[in-house]
Length: 141
Image (tube, rainbow, N blue to C red):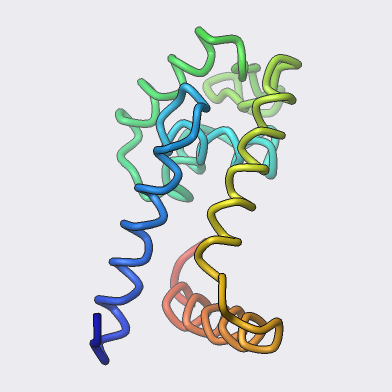
């Protein structure tokens, strides 16, 4: 495919990467995996904050968190500073699953970057980081 439209390429690459992730045997949706990874990175995060990070509606996230909690991968704990709020925390059962997610992410990234030199990957990563900074300058992400 030949195109000079960066937005189209980025969108299509993400679509193809999601398709590749779906081939895994993780037994969870890509969004559940993303939420679990974010909770591991920002343990204690509130649901509203996590919804913003994932760019999904809070009600959608609530159902997703309900499922992860039912599967005993995460738990909600009351926030000692705000009795109305709950922080999200990993449960022990999530550790091996996070390791599998990491292996799967590495597999997909290696496939996507196949044929690129380390220097090209570094340039790509730097360019994407600049784009991310430019587009998220007015947001909390």
